[in-house]
Image 1 (cartoon, rainbow, N blue to C red):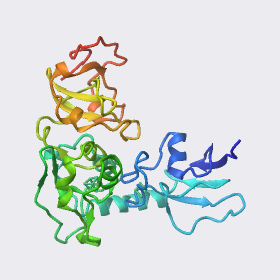
Image 2: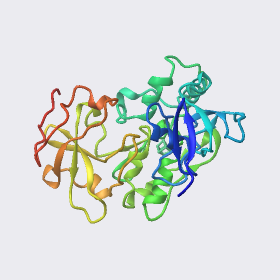
Image 3: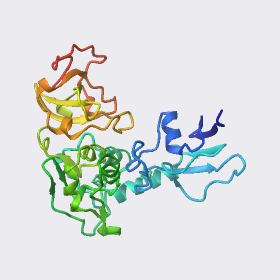
Image 4: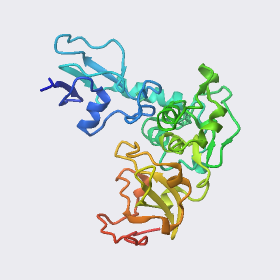
Length: 322
Ligand code: SF4
Ligand code: FES
């Protein structure tokens, strides 16, 4: 049997297989695991871009009890036997995280009131926890025009935090990658030749993996504030993907289809463009019942009486407020 490695994070210990990162171990432990804006467990090579997952390694290993000299990215750093990590318990980590959030917000517009991603935006959530009310930034912010990248997706580069998730998603889910990050440093941007990517099947998943509102679904833009819509688990028989989705309802109309996400905000099963964009009729789907978005989500606020036992199709079931 594989030798397991014991790691202690914020005073709680867990044994994990070699190769496990601190972030993965922390997620298994539950509680306050580090946030992640660029790492995405189902996309290879993600991580190491945003630095919000920084933690302090107070003891490197059983045989090397010295701390690591700097805070490390927990999504990239593998655990060692006897490693001791401080996440939420370290004031140094929290201060660094506040600083990273301040950097992420330097160029990010505060347009949550008109952004489709509001209510399900990782940066918005992170800012509530680690942001400050004001800004110290006096320089000119970067601004870009919105670009339509095909019939279904709009790129609003001004909101992009350059996490690279959409690049890895396009590379790994579509049959060829045709976009990327152009230039370096403060002139980096997602290149407009992303326009080509939208032709590829599964390219709509770049919308779901984008942690902010930089890539939005044109078929859904400005249809509804997300917390006023009703998410339902839905499925259909599909030859290309699992057909397991969330159908977002306004009244009896489906206004958006997305993939289902897990407790870490990551897609459970990537869905094809046909399911996402071309089936918006109620009759296209078997509605399973209201989706539990988790207690922490603003989308759940006052919305459901759970658990819900739903018939095959009953879209009005159990909502307690509109
Ligand atoms: S568009 Fe979204 S997913 Fe792509 S790099 Fe920017 S923030 Fe990340
Ligand atoms: S999640 Fe680790 S650097 Fe972004």
